Length: 245
Image 1 (tube, one colour):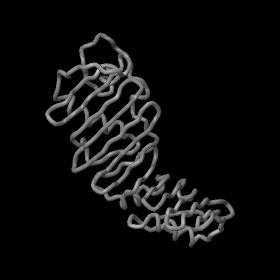
Image 2 (cartoon, rainbow, N blue to C red):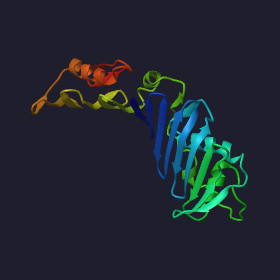
Image 3 (cartoon, rainbow, N blue to C red):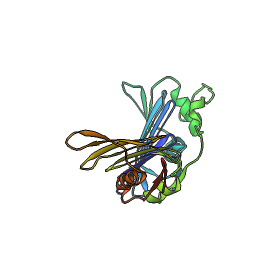
């Protein structure tokens, strides 16, 4: 398993499952992909919460700078099929069930007129309404830059292709934190646990054996630790606090 964090998102590869999460102001999105489809989806804002299961992939690629739009595209495919949702009541608010056959989409309206914000985002009226509202800024794509990946790409390819944008790499062996190509810190959770920080004067590490001791390792020592963390996904080179694949 490997998790890559970049921009406002993180993507986790765990066997055949790909889990993508995005956290931006006033919005949290999660998409779980398995066997050429979306097995689970959730999108939450201050006004509404959307959950989905067994949905079609709207595209074979996804921009990690705009996961929310990918989720919208997935639910639009189902909402277009069902013009009359089943409406129920929950403690959070009205529940609109747009499920079709085995494809499930449910929308919970948490605040009044929230559903109308959603209809503007989807560019489709969900229910007859005389209320006309402007689409709020947080409902539009929040893009700082772009990080488009193909869902058919292997994690090794994504790691290499977007290495400079990636800020954190997490594997079963530990993690590496970086800013651009500059190493910030790393943690190796092997038999002897090691936590290292990159400093202007070199590296400061804490190693746990019988007790915790402080060390000042070389570039090659840090490089070896980093490659133990990355084992199976790539091989890096470290020099003077800089890291490259």
